[in-house]
Every structure is written in structure tokens, then in C-alpha cells.
Amino acid sequence: MTRSVSLLSGLVALLCAVALPVLADDSLPDRILGRRDAPITVEEYVSMTCPHCAEFYIKDLPELEKTYVDTGKVRFILRDFPLDGVALKAAVVARCMPEDEYYPFIKTLYGNMMAWANAQNVDQALIQYAKLGGLSEANAKTCLQDQVLQDRVIAERTKAAEKLNIQATPTFVINYGVEKLQGAQTVAQFSAVFDRLLAAKK
Image 1: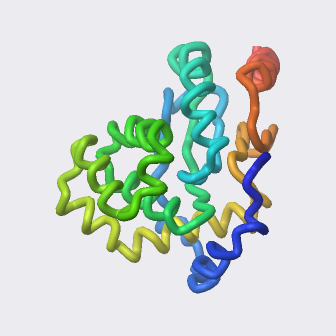
Image 2: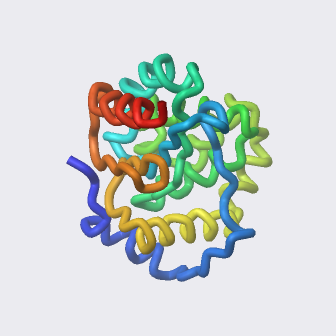
Image 3: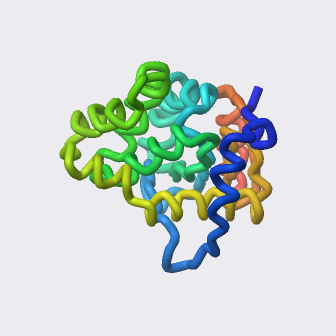
């Protein structure tokens, strides 16, 4: 099952406190996995505390990387869609990582989600993981307190909900709306869509 936004009243209260306009020059920079000129773009809307998102990163993405990303056919762009305050903190810390450490950090967090997301001190747990990825403790603490960055993540989430009707995670928007997959998917399901789109481009 996907984690529906409508069921998460705690985050609703958090997000409703900030209703920000999203300006083009204030958008978060893309974090791209794959070649920038890949013929297929997958925008993945994920929450860092979403079990199905973690499953995708742990089980499915490695295989898709070998077949489609490493061969230059597909690129993934992570779009933050935090479903709770803990996920928001993780998304913010990830955004502060060096660009080449961004996806390794995301994969590490998903691989250890139960440990840090359920820690007594979530901030300190995230800081420890960030340090392993090359971010200093001081910078990680500053990042967690960066209200502007938090607001930008929330604004991106709001834009996705309003303009693309994203309501649950994970949601995969392929080639800017040509295809849309929602919820847990198998490698075979991704492959069927990718292969069809690639064949159409020949």
C-alpha cells in the first residue's frame, strides 16, 4: 500500500503553517542519477520515511541502474515529498550533502531507515550519517536549522500536490507526465514502460 497524504494529519498541520509561492529561481536544484541527456526521465516523488520508497531503493533501483541508468537510457530525479516531520529533516540534510554524495546518502538512509527514523534523537542520528558521507557535524547542524531550505522543500512538495496531483509515495512521473506509476512497482513493470518508450523513439 502507498502512504496516503490524507492519513497524515501531523504533517498536514506542519505544512499548512507554511503556504509559500514557488518561484522558478527558488526551486531546489535537480539531483540527477544518470546521464543528463538520457531519453527517459523519471521524477520520483518520495518520502524518506516511506517503506515502499526504501524498498525501491534497496531492491529495485540497483537492477534498474545496471540495465537502464548505467547504459544512458534513463535518468532519475528525486523529488522530495516528505510525509512527516522526520522525513522533512532527512530531506533537508540530504540536500546539504555534496552533490556526488547525494544519492549514496539517500541509499544509506533508506538502507538504515528503521535505525535513524526511530532513534530517540533523530537529529543526532542524521548528523552521524551525514558525517559518514563527508559533511561536517557543524554543517549538518546548521543544515537542520536552515528554515529557508525547509521552506523550499515544503514548497516543492506543495507544488507537486497541486500541479501534478501527487498524493502518495512513491510516485514515478515518467517523461514529464507521459506515464505515471504510483506505489510499489516491480522491476518488470518499470522495464515494460521503459522498453516501450525506448522503442517508440527509434
